Length: 545
Image 1 (cartoon, rainbow, N blue to C red):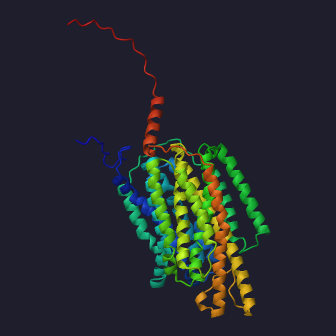
Image 2 (cartoon, rainbow, N blue to C red):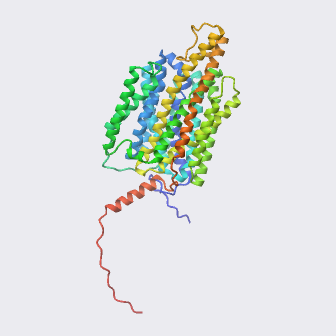
Image 3 (spheres, rainbow, N blue to C red):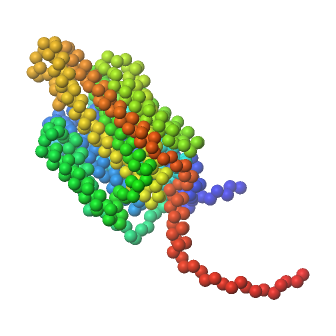
């Protein structure tokens, strides 16, 4: 006879009684939501040149179509994380999907770059919700000890979205038009909404003392936006050393300082500052910034390497990055299973930072003539390093913070990873542009070819339309330029290794977030009940047999 309790119809699952199949069933909507978040940022990359040309935009619009999403996603991530500690997480992630749907549909009907940029900003708010809440809801369903094996599925979805995005975007742009790059995410988001409604069961939160720190959130958003806009536009729209730089950097720092002052006094701060008193959280933040710069700031340029240095189409360039995804998926899945079996995660994170450093260094040796087999091996090593570090940083933080701050803590790591990625894309992109311009100019001078009309580092050339000698020079410039930014990013792998080395490993907990919250509620209820008066022992006459 089976004595395992079953959940009530429509209610949350009984704590500790979810089988592997039940957890996968509940995760199905979350995984699809994560795929939507990744797809939104990668599917447009292959279509951007045609989009900007069709809407008659310039280089500034090209930059802002990408920056708008990254900006609002980064700013909104900690806000969504804190809200998940205060409100129902299922409803929040569904709200995020609705916001993403709204932005996607409106973007598909854009008639100007200004309209498109605004819609991309709306998309970013929705993607910020998905980025923050998927990991938090996973912590509700699964204990830290068992969470590692399910982190592998998130890594697999991340890799699939990274590869499938450019491929789908290239096929849609060539076959149906660029507008379908925005419409393609709509059915996935709608299906995710249905799955979440049918499969995800979370306890309803009831709090009467909810306070939202609007002032602190405004200061924080403005400060981060000032710094992100600076790193996005510096070197393109104005010089790095200019009055615009001084105004944005100083203004951003002042606004963030004001945010810290407000957060210290707020009853419900968006970013609880006491989290930074935990060494694991601090080290994970440092490692997340380094991983974000290395991951987003380098893998984004793999597409440019394949298209501009090797001459492949957008579809083919997406397929050629599969080795990196295989490495990411394999290492994330295998290390997650071993973490669940052994309860130890630090050793895998250290191995991941070593692989990340080695992969970046190996990618720093390529050029336009490097064998694709070698490039594939190097990408595999790089992906393996990312897979062993990226998800496990959040696992380490979730394991050491209180259950009532799990949302803010998880979003904090995602926030700094996105922030590092945004900085990496801008800074390394500026370095790449400068390197391409100087290498192209030197190559043209050596060949005695006039530089007038030749491509510069500030614009992306149509390599196929260039004359043969000029094309070889440009391919060499991009081949060596992309390699240089990988080499520059390699020391960040060392920074991540040092941060993980000083991270304190704590035994993984065996209770899910739902169980811990239930225990916390029971303890609170017990402490609120008045102590029952003691009764004198009842005297009874002895019974004689």
